[in-house]
Image (cartoon, one colour):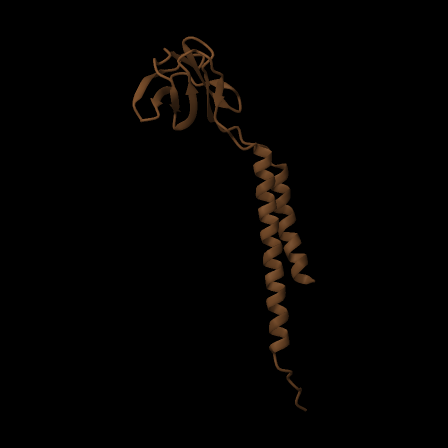
Amino acid sequence: MGRFRSLVLATVPLAGVLLFAHPASAHDLRLKVDTQREPIVVFAWFEGDDTPADGASVTITSQSGEVIASGTTDERGMWSFARPGTGGSFTATVESIGHRDVVLFPLEPSGSGGEYSGWRLHKWLGAAIGLMLLLGGSAAYWCFRRKRTSKSLKTTPDVKESK
């Protein structure tokens, strides 16, 4: 029972820190490509405070890796480029102050399209998964140690006291 108590006493504060920690206000560069507009518009911003990524470099490449267009975003985090004459799959890459985001998007020569952005795991879902892994690992370790300890107690020979 003492080991289980120690495990709980070690895990509960750590779980509390993980659950109630205030999120850091670090920047995560995000990118959205709007292919419904003419010309096509790329939006770049920093997630967290939605600051536009002013001066971010943007590169559009084809599926074969050929650079179709490149440029930098304006003070609103926007950059636009002419629709290529051919359709297909394209990749938009934005880079700014050490951050990078990549979005794969399809283009039709006809002009139909949509808005495309990268997928991110929700922060709270990531924290919950991490907590479950931590607690699951702690429980597995506790079970392993308990089983191992009970085996060693069974195999230890009884020692008689000498008088």
